[in-house]
Amino acid sequence: MPLLTRMIGAPLSVDIGPGAVAHLAPLLADRRISSGGHVAVVVGPGLGEEIADTLRPRLSNADFVTLGDGGVHEAYELAKRVRAGSFDAVVGIGGGRTLDVAKLTSTLGGLPMVAVATSLAHDGIASPVASLEEGGRKGSFGVQMPIALVVDLDYVRRSEPEMRRSGIGDVISNLSAIADWQLAGAERGEPVDGLAVTFARTAATSILHRTDGVEEPDFLLALAEALVLSGLAMATAGSSRPCSGGDHEILHAIDHLFPGTARHGELAGAAALFCAVLREDAGMAADIDACLRRHGLPRTPAELGLGEEQFVAAVLHAPATRPDRYTVLEHLGLGEQEVATRVREFAAAFA
Image 1 (cartoon, one colour):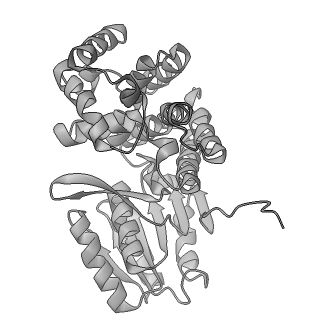
Image 2 (cartoon, rainbow, N blue to C red; image 1 turned 180 degrees about the horizontal axis):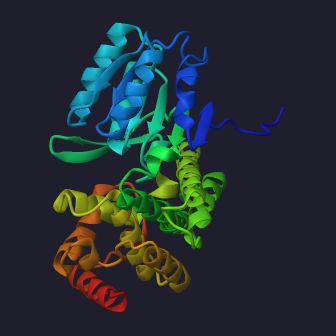
Image 3 (cartoon, rainbow, N blue to C red; image 1 turned 30 degrees about the vertical axis):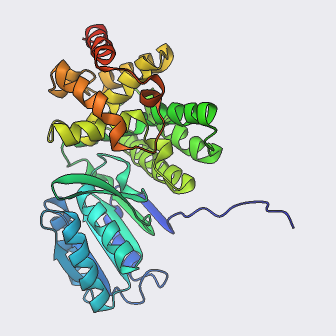
C-alpha cells in the first residue's frame, strides 16, 4: 500500500489565551502526561516564580527547581535529578532560556516536556531546538519539542514590550530563511520540504502586515500562534532550516563577537532585512522594513548598537556559525571590501 500521509510530531495540547495558567494543574495531571502530577518543574525568575507559587498548592507531587544561570551544565545536572526522581515529565515555566533548559533536561532525561511561556521573544517556545551557553559560547542543541504548550496572554502582557516586539523580528525572518532554503535547493539540490515552508511562511505573513501592536490582545494571540507554527515548521523539517538562514548566521555571529548587543528577535529582524537587500529582493526588503518600522524594531547596525565595522565583521564570520548551511552569504561569497561596501550602502539606504 502506498504511503498516503506522514506523521508529524506535534504537541498534544496547545492552550493560548488569557487565563490559560488556570488550566495548567489539570493538564499536568492528565494521564497522557502524568498519572498524578509527579513532575519536575523548572522555574525561571520573575513571572515564572509567580506562576509556580499558584501551582504549588495544587501539585503536591511536583518538585520545583529554581533556575540558576541557565547554562548547559545546569540542564545536565537537572537531567540527573529527574532520572533519579522517577518523574513523569519536566515542566518549564518562564522565558526562552528557562524553556530551553527544560527542553534539554527532558531530552537528556528521556521525559516529555511541558512549556509554559511567559514571553513571546522568539520561536523557541515550541521548537525542537534549545540555544544555551556552554563554555562561554552559545550553541544550538536538537531536542524534543514540548508535548504541551501553555501561553497565558495575561502574563505575556506584563512582560517587557521589547521582548514582545522581539518575537516579531524572529517570526518575519522566516521569509529570509525560506528564500535561503529555496536557493540551496536550486543551487545544490538540497531537498526543500514544502509543508515546513508552508508553516514557516504562514507564521511570517500572519504578522507581517498587521497594523495593531504588542499592546493588543488580538495581536499577541496572532504572534503566539505564529511562534508555534514556526516550531512546527522546524519539527516538520527535522531542522531549523525553515526559520534560520543567513539572517540567523549573522545573528549568531553577532552573539559570538559582540555578546549582549540586542535580543535574539531584534537581531533576526535586522539581519533578515540585510539579507533581503543582498538577495536584491526589493519586495521582501520593503515588507520587512515596513514591519520593523511599524513596531519600533531596529533595522540598521547603528540601531542595533553596532558600528559598521562590527557588522562587517559579523557578516564575514557568519558562515562559520553554520558550516553545513548554504545561504545567500555562501552563495555570494563576498570578500571583506565587498561586504564593507554592501553594509555601508545598506546603512545609508535605511538610515
